Length: 288
Image 1 (tube, one colour):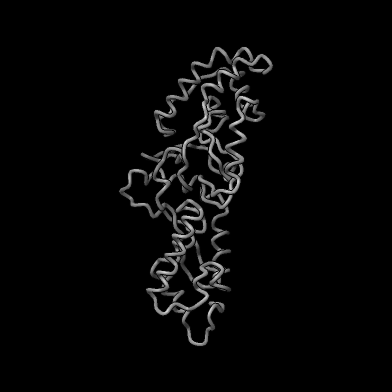
Image 2 (cartoon, rainbow, N blue to C red; image 1 turned 180 degrees about the horizontal axis):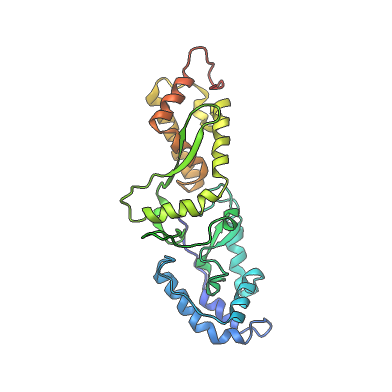
């Protein structure tokens, strides 16, 4: 999860080019809907991508099918679709925080909202979470909605952290919202967590990081090649590694940072520090 800069493509010009192309199957029927689509794009931006506030757009079934088809097989006027996808290939997924992307996600899905099928500001680079997230865009309670990486600045804050209990070879690992409950985006962040992040393989990934930490601490936190001199130094070392991961991944909610955040809970710090400094353990030796 992370905040992205909004695309700067000229979507109105792309619509005009599509509608005016006699070689496309959407010609000439798309021409009569261009004004409506441009107005919808403008309203989407005015609503800051808040799916609760974006007005529905009624389109004939044939026009909706054409727009979805243009996304699936983009003509030259929609070259930006491939560009958004290619530029995102090695980035942190802004929707779930995994360490890869390479696909595109329609924030408002193209099946129920075909008007935004080709709208660049509705197309967000993502990983395979785009096929796993729950379909509803809003929840039953006030403020519950999917977060939008192009508009929601809260995605620049730390939202998710691991929570580890039953510490040992195979601990219990959950993910939790660490955003202040008074934050106006708390309900949306919680809904996004449950609808998107919880549908991914994050918990298996976090368990794999723990297993590596138990065998070779330096694989997870390089500065732990040497034992910390005291508890406060251990906290400082892990905290510095957390900040380093945030900056490397351009996200405070990438899965590595989610894991490291969980290591800084007091009960985890106490458990890890005791095992790092137990009598007879060699520097960088296993913790169990």
